Image (tube, rainbow over all chains, first blue to last red; front, side):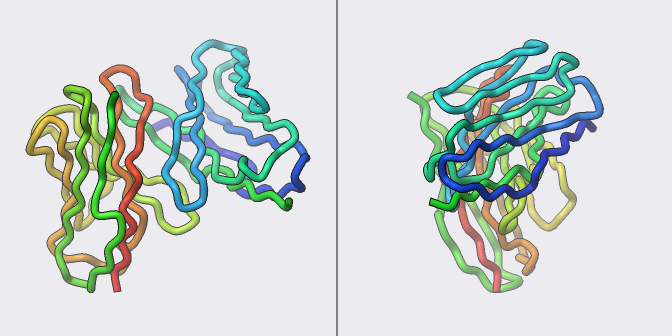
Length: 110
Length: 112
């Protein structure tokens, strides 16, 4: 089935620095979702991207879906300690399965 | 509004003992239900999903099983736990066609 590679696997930044994580697929995706999991918590849905070249913003978070619908990125401007966690970009396989990868774990030095 | 309940939150079990984790969803009908497992510091592995009562799809062959005795109830079981079954078990639901998952708080299992 379809798989996505998410990079980097780990990222440590100083508070106030920007952060970007990327998801890359070898095949065209119908859509892509982003979730955030705080340490010790459960994943929480952030956003879904559907259209080619789509860009969506949530405060300091910017989500982008590539023109070819094979990649996506999440960019956080001026990170805060509340941004700590693991970010996932699962994809849909078949009609009902949502498949998660390893995610990108973000840690922040205050 | 919809809510998802998962229990127990934490459990420590000896190798070879049985397991039962329960998940219920309120405020919606005919949800898709999912069980994921997350090993420490790792990604989420899809174990089972269900699109209706009695309909279970297994993703990973192992000593775990799932059942859906009622529309909004999803149970994860094992007859004999292995050390490798330790992990964070997450139940989730979505509506048909939407595929956006809402997760429960999780059950942290340690097998000793």
